[in-house]
Amino acid sequence: RVGDNWRHRYDSLVLHDPVHYDEMPFFPYPQTWPVFAPKEKMGDWLELYASAMELDVWCSTTVDDAERVGDRWRVTLRSGASEGGARRTVSPAHVVLATGVSGTVPQTPQVPGEFDGPVVHSSGYRGGGFGGKHVVVVGTGNSGHDVAQDLVEHGDRVTMIQRGPTYVVSAGAVGAVMMGASYSDSSPPTSISDYLGASSPHLSAATTAGLQAATAAMAEYDAELHRGLSAAGFALSHGDDGTGSMRLFLGRGGGYYIDVGCSRYIVDGAISVRSGVSLDGYDGRDVLLSDGSRVAADAVVLATGFGGMEKTARAIFGDELAESCGQVWGLDDEGEVCGVWRRTAQPGFWFAGGNLGFARMYNRYLALTIGQDHLAKKKSEREMA
Image (tube, rainbow, N blue to C red; front, side, top):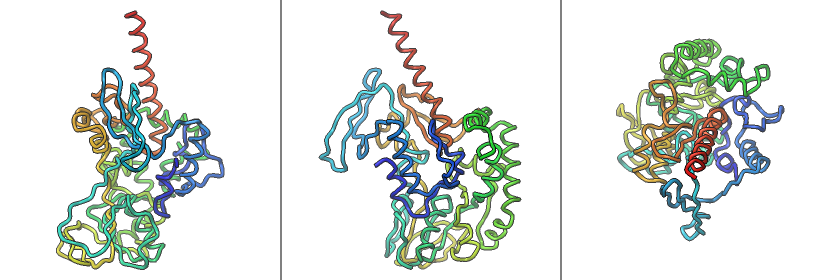
């Protein structure tokens, strides 16, 4: 079903951006919608959206093979989960890879030794905890915090492994400072806010100064929270050049946490933190850390991210296409996102990613560019005729 990628995740999963920023194109949320929507509501909304907008969605379908033939693609699709599923071939002029900014290939570290218990990547954690066990969560981004929160709320004891400083901002600070002027009940319409947000490059002096000022204001808002986290041994960052989460998101898709409930467990001691260390190995029921210490555990959750859109492209479309596309995500010298929502070196192949706000803003420009290509092709055919 449409929306199952939300429904089947852990119980604590919610949107980390305010609802005003995450509005869907042409179909805004009801005014009664919660500011940070939980996963079940998001899953149901996506299904409702697909139905109301009459989107042609094929669920339980896998791309088995894809190749460029002339000026079109030949894409072989398989229905169902088994290799014996029915196959059909389609021939689109364009293919858009829109499987998320992080991609679909889990980043799983190769760790020496054997662990005598379950080790799962965060993408495979379905919630509900481990039954009152001691769990080590490796990683302190959004997923690491969400998983840790779910574990604690189901009775587990949690230790988080933090390799380096993390930028933390409360949802309240984001709503009051970062989004208040642009995406809130009192701001201009979403379409106007989108134009304002997209009007200057991400690396411009004005954008940098604005992000630095907003980050400083949010740090003041969160001063008590940050003092509590520091006292608990959690290492804090202010982002690249003091610009908070936005540059971290655009540069590497991580390194920050928008607090929707987990930080209070760290401050209160329900979640312990080992900072400045990395996962070094396993030895039975012990997790070995880079400083030579050990943490006894019953289970390990690896919140270590994903390989990015390039790896998904490589897995589906092959090495040649993936290597021809160049860098995907991160910022170029002009301050624009590399490879996403814009032309790649492979004709008819596009990347789309980002959060709901970015998808709403920039997929419009991607669609207009595809439309422009289509019109140019039709004009050329008429002239040749």
